[in-house]
Image (cartoon, rainbow, N blue to C red; front, side, top):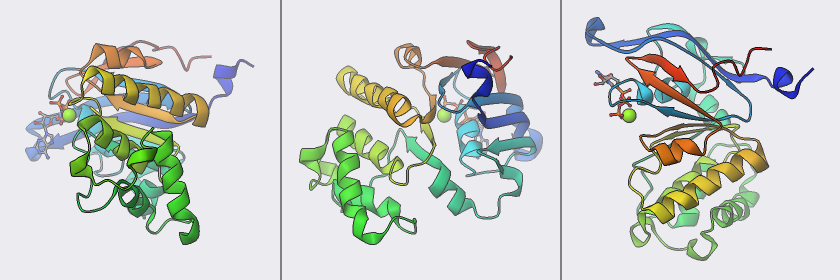
Length: 235
Ligand SMILES: Nc1ncnc2c1ncn2[C@@H]1O[C@H](COP(=O)(O)OP(=O)(O)OP(=O)(O)O)[C@@H](O)[C@H]1O
Ligand SMILES: [Mg+2]
């Protein structure tokens, strides 16, 4: 059996619709997507085609109007403990990273461990390790307003990793960064895939960013228009 054939699907989106305003807006309209464990997928497409809506549904921040989504075995239509699912399964990174301005870098990462299984005594050391992983070891005691945009984005990524989720969902994480910071963030994503086997779904408008992914999925009108590895999962 080939390696690809035994890689399990971690994310399965089947015939998903998401409508708003009593059906006037069809944000997702028959979306199908399967993502294997360890894949790095870039989602592209014009403004309004449903990219952020898809990520919100994958993170169980919202539910589909129709269709099914399975993430690491969870049926998101019948999820009982949304918070637990999000904490254990998903690391979320948005363009506007919502760091807490009064907390240090260390505090911002550590607070994401609230309620997790990690013992309190280990949280500070683990947060420091993650901050080192994103090359911000020297800035652990600074507060977000004292950081550059790229540094803040890397704090947001460290925070998203705080509970070792198997999946990282990122919505235009490089949108406001200069090219040096973009390279640093992309290098980090590639390391996360290679060293931790993370599954990454990243929304971007930027072809350079999409170019580092294993697979590029282009959406149009709420569904997939082009999939660079459409037959990836066929035996
Ligand atoms: N809460 C909402 N209520 C009503 N319409 C919404 C809501 N959220 C999104 N939409 C609409 O759904 C469609 C898809 O939106 P979405 O945010 O997923 O697009 P996108 O692909 O992420 O676009 P962009 O590249 O601009 O971020 C758009 O027409 C948007 O206006
Ligand atoms: Mg969007």
